[in-house]
Amino acid sequence: MKLTHDLDNLRERIGRALHLDYIKQMSGAMRAGKLERGPEWAIVYRTAHGFCCIYQGEAVELQEMLDVQIWAEEMDVQTWFIGL
Image 1 (cartoon, rainbow, N blue to C red):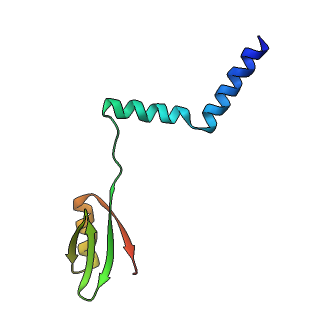
Image 2 (cartoon, helix red, strand yellow):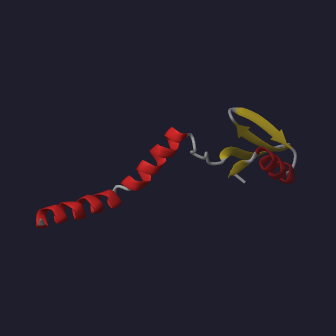
Image 3 (cartoon, rainbow, N blue to C red):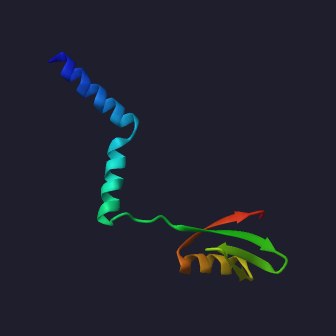
């Protein structure tokens, strides 16, 4: 009986250490199609004429920082600034 109890404790400790419950939840959500995607990211850098974003492999040129912020809000994109 003690061996069974010790094995259960060991199984629970290993499961917590490896986050097995989280992995089970994520795999179940993926199978059910309920997995929410995180926000997309766009790389933004300063150019001689304003700003440029690289979004889904395409360059998007914007004039001012306010334009970048409005564009990011409309597209539901998180911006990552390089070299500003």
